Length: 307
Ligand code: GDP
Ligand code: MG
Image 1 (tube, rainbow, N blue to C red):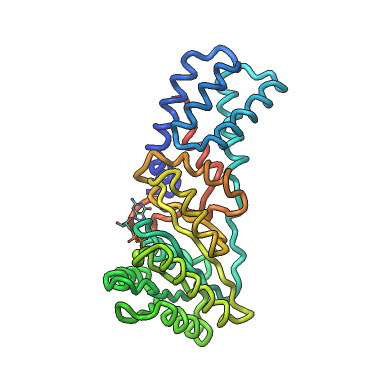
Image 2 (image 1 turned 30 degrees about the vertical axis):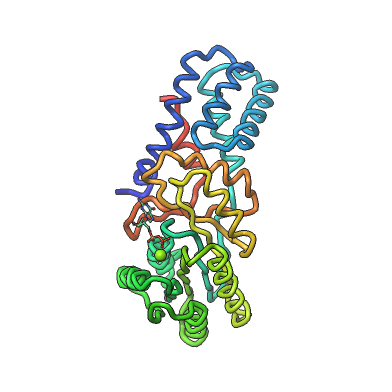
């Protein structure tokens, strides 16, 4: 299936969620008045858009309609799309260096390991240039984690650094970083654990891994930290960004599982709350090619319709 169609299909549940509510508002539409704006705001909130984001959209719409004397529902839908784009639009370029290390963080089950497989495959031919990818199995908390990553390494045809269960994840990352320096790899992508004995252990371990990278990184290597979030958890994603931001300087978000959820509207909440943390990629399935750069216009166009 072509990527565009695949994307459209992935957003279908979110689209239905939005569109069913919009449809009922527009069925009674006569003009943009307080009643209309209230109903619209309410329906956005019911579609996983946070209260601050929904009220921002409402105010922007009110202003726009006041000045431009908008009349038809079609015009309003277009304006609504553009307002949403203005909120969710973000820089998706990464400005990669010759060598790059990407640390992938996130709580258990959000899709880190799967996303690393997809990213390895994606960066292999990034911008039509061949790249050599190395991945590091720094989730040493469960034996199955390294095995799962190894499968992805096979699928993406890239090399992996792994150690036995329970070994020090910092040591795995250190070894992989040395390999990145020594050999002709372009990208090193590091998996991490999403669950340890408790949350403070997890955060302490991530900080330690991050410090090891900073201490051993070369001038010609650029570090990126991506936080993976599961779209089906809706606005819980906001708490996760808050928690991980306390210890890591997050360069970008990856929102997974958009294919299976109606809660895609939470993307608007995240962008409103964290305007300085761009969404880089989205996950739209369990296969290796089910990753896409985040496209704000495409997302907005896909979810807003009055049909
Ligand atoms: P981790 O614990 O963060 O490493 O998460 P995993 O990579 O093990 O993924 C957890 C589950 O989510 C697996 O069953 C994956 O197949 C599934 N998954 C990951 N990304 C996506 C996605 O974009 N769409 C769907 N439908 N499932 C996904
Ligand atoms: Mg994992």
